Image (cartoon, rainbow, N blue to C red; front, side, top):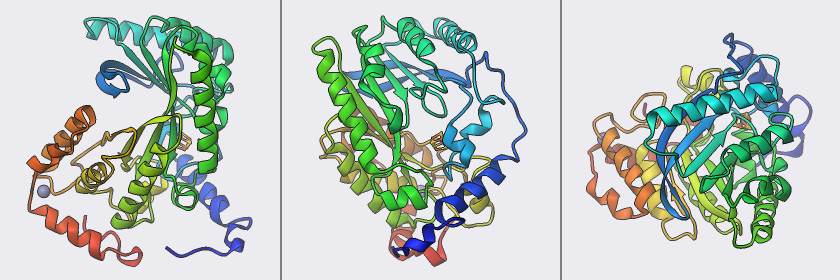
Length: 366
Ligand code: SF4
Ligand SMILES: [Zn+2]
């Protein structure tokens, strides 16, 4: 990878330029959404430090991420689902929680042990979710075993985590770190913070964990992005292997969720994809990283979204469902032998891509 001179980061270049393009792309969106309804809610199963648990995942509609409004990350289309006007009242947020609880009651046999709340932004950012709403939501789920809330590292502090742990609920903060490599996070993802900020957030969680004593655990779940734009397949794989290793080595970070990039509307990735300049990662790459990092001291999972489609991570179409299933098995069992049972001729094509794809000829295949 080449190294830029400092003047690349001058006004109008680097991050400024990325933000300008992303603002233009996002402004093409026209839809608006009801602040009383969550963006999405569903029941599933998840691997946690205490084993596999039934989960309720909530995507709260909070007015969206501040960074996205400045331009934001090159692959993230979530702001296109946020409410117009940029903020959601306490009452509307609580209405959304009621809708989620009603959904859980209708679809599940019993309350889920694990509650995951994402906001397409930062749940711990008080401009998105005020302290009053945060505490009311913590109260609403006080009888659960574990909660995961999503946040950028800047907003993570021990007092906010304590709103949940004081109920005896194990609490994780999910941080969209994307990669441990600052250069890739800044220049390919257009995310503004550094790995050091992630380490600081992990230290806050470790403090919250110590303060909660035996009543509850607190920790960090790192979300990584496999294959942001501008990286070749092999660069993306190498970046993920080192990122998983570096995250797992940070105290306070007990889970790494490594997720392949998919092509979302109203993003720079979408524009590149449309001009034949981007291909989502191969599922073989995901399997390869999971196998290579099996010895790290953390749970490592991956949840490929849109697998098998052109806009999602995919192999040759023939084997996509099989490899996806092996990845999901791996998530629950952490046993790399699940990948020995899948094979396909397209693995040879993937190997050729890994060997021969360069920045100037990518993507080498569709
Ligand atoms: S990925 Fe996260 S930080 Fe980046 S624009 Fe989307 S919501 Fe904001
Ligand atoms: Zn195949």
